[in-house]
Structure formats: structure tokens, C-alpha cells
Length: 189
Image (cartoon, rainbow, N blue to C red; front, side):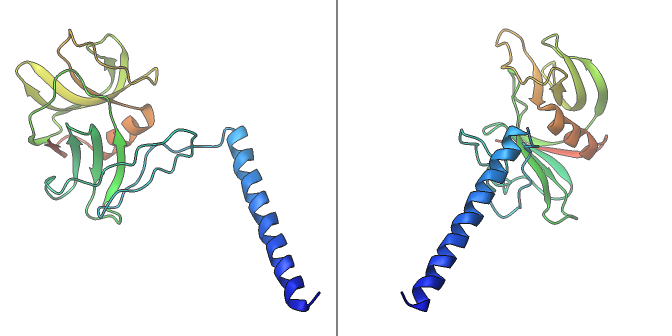
């Protein structure tokens, strides 16, 4: 056996050990209930794969719509039901991207601003909600972002006209911290 075969064998053996240790470390974190982020920071130039490891496929957030305007803003897409928190002074400019559960009525695409905020309250569906950020009212329906305090994002009852756009509690906190009164909200198709 020549020296090249020994070196190749040692290199392959070392790679196998490193791979096994990495696999075991990842499994140990999963069993220990390691933190699994659900919010994906996305660059403005394209989609980003989710940082959430799971057995099921996690949807990749779409890129920031080019028709979303400029400046610091919250962008909501009525077709994809995604929200982008955009701050052009930061790098990347998209601070967070997350999927939401819409109400039964969608706001008309356009530019709005946060008109009021409420730390806690009761949603149209009777659930306790928090981080309510309202931005529009159309035909008697108030539109705003919120999160259910029980952590659920249920499908809205189609018999009730509601403009509540629900996110997870962690994402609701991000939006609450990002969007004080007066913050621009851009709704795109």
C-alpha cells in the first residue's frame, strides 16, 4: 500500500467522522427543542430559503414585490398573503418576511398608513388578540394586522366580514415594533 492510498483513506475517514458529528449535533438540537426561527429575513434581490428545518417543505417567501413603492414600509400582498417589513436604511433592506392568514375581506391595493394601534383586544371572531396595527377602513370593514394570543392563525369564518390579517405571535411582535402610527403600509395585488 502506497502513501497516497493511506492519505486518501485518512482523508475519507476524517470526512466521515465530521459528517457524523454534524448529523448528531443537528439531531441533538432537534431533540432538545432547539429554537427554530419561523421568520425569514429576506434580501431585496430575491427569495430566501427558510431557516426552519423540518420534515415537511417550508414555503420559500416570494421576493419583495417591485410595485411596493419606496421608503420604510410594511408591504402586504393580497394574492400571496405575505408581509414584508422594509427599511431601506438597513442591509438587507427587508427586515422580515412572513406569511399571514387573511380575513374574509381583502383591502384594496394602494398606499395607506398605520392609523391606530392597540396592545390587546378582542377580534371579530371573539378571540383574544394582541399587537393590533390598523391601517385602513373600507365599506365598514377595518383592516389591520394582529396575532391571536392563543398562538393560532385560524381560517376566518366566511359568514363574518372581517379585515383582520393574522400572524404568529412572534411575527406580530416584529410588526408591532416596526410599525408605529404613521408608518406607510402598501397593499399590492
